[in-house]
Image (cartoon, rainbow, N blue to C red):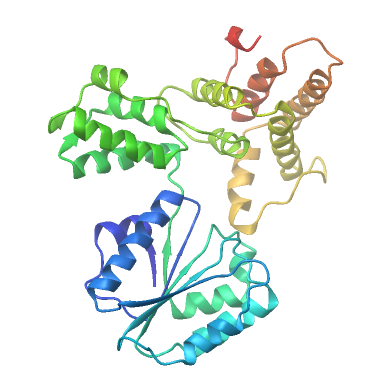
Length: 339
């Protein structure tokens, strides 16, 4: 069985049994699902709890021993297996497969993982978990879904916002749901139940948005209110304020251009996409002509010279132009604050 973490938290099961796996890219969703799981386990009588954190040099024999041992203090117990890297190695893979084949009786098992890429999902140990466990995915909340997520959080504390206010709030907290939760909880203290106006949000909510260059690439293809160019500028503003180095941003954007050129059959450069992203990449590539992508590639080469001090122009301004070019939007407005 596979469940979104949000669904698991909002409509928790009446009882738990067997093996559960919580994994995904969104730390807040994973944290809330794991906390609720432990609470439900205690309420169900699973008092005794053993935690195994599979870091470097972890002895996987301990897991096998725990699975075959009897509970010392209660008839029901919980075993928690934490894999911070999501890569258990050969010994760990075999141990997880064996554990799934013979789950211990009267035992509730929780496995927590980070986000797993498509290659990791093809491994034998992950496949064994999928066949045996209830999979709870803490998927990232992308920008188009963020207003709905915020509306749901506000609704839990009997508050609401109109569409414009939700878009403003989404801009302030994008990429940082842990801080977003704090800002929403702050609104519960500052404002009475009911609708919260845009003016109140502007005066109350801090700008806690956080971005990385890889999120910037994803944003190039999202349709959001206010326009892509404005969002790209806001993300680059945030990256610069956080001290992100232009070379990494350039590498990510230039690799996207090369990948689009590869999809158009113009070059073999660029990293091939995973099968799950191939169709999406093909659709994105069709938005561009080969000549247009070649011009973007030339712009990336020029920005590289700017970063190295061989060209006196502002690399941030031209990174904005490059990102807008990939997104297929105009970038005629100069960003004077980047100079």
